Amino acid sequence: MTSWKGGPLNERVTCTLCPNPGPMTLEGTNTWILSAPGSDEAIVIDPGPLDEEHLQQVLADVAGRGARVALALFTHGHWDHAESLERFAELTGAPVRGNCPGAEPVSDGEVLEVAGLRTVAVLTPGHTMDSVCFLLEQDGVLFTGDTILGRGTTVVAHPDGQLAAYLSSLDRLAGLAADGTVRTLAPGHGPVLTDAAPTVQQYADHRQERLAQVRDAARESADLSRSDLADAVVASVYADVPRDVWPAARQSVLAQLDYLDLGRP
Ligand SMILES: [Zn+2]
Image (tube, rainbow, N blue to C red; front, side):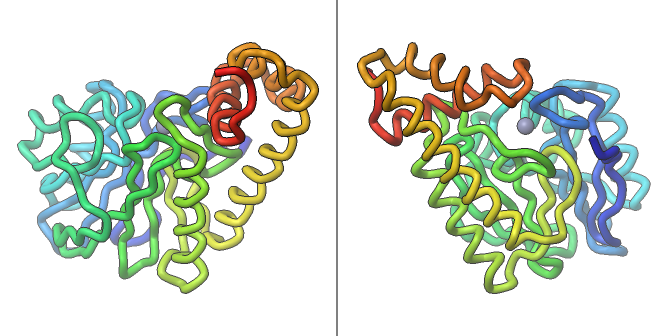
């Protein structure tokens, strides 16, 4: 386990790490603060769970940059990213954008000119259907939420998440990494990754490997219901993964069985 603690990425970007570590959240949720040097505005991405101490720390870190929160962005609606949505809006009075409930939707390619920066919304459904990444253009930094994590792999959160959509989103990110638009990945959990292109490729490869494994494991018990088949597949394909992540693995397996149309619905 690396010991990611958050902190500055460059003069425009810093991370306040929420103290909610766990098997799915790694060291905790990364709350990202963006502001151009000298700007009195800041963007906050994923204020996180409803943890008042963390929210106050985020506000203190924004104030420490001589700024106030001018925009809150949400990568998706899972509690560990967005449970604080209403409270953060109340604390800051800032507009709240994202495709999760309670936020004003963003459209694909929408440019947000706030805090002296150009930040572009890149819709990446898959982990959840409301997942959005945000691209800080000048640095080539993509804030990925849970679409790509700092370590390990992400979950396709069945039934809301969809594998076909997730694979298309990875394809799209691979294109953005290949042409140099995206160079660095700033995930919702875990450390920053400075090798965007190979990382996105690893995610795509891993998904295809798991799909092949799931297809093979499912073939042996093709007469089971999808739910029973998922249990059998998790026990065989994810045997090497700690049991505390099996419930999440099961969601991914269900998404894969859906995608492969295996098991009785
Ligand atoms: Zn998360």
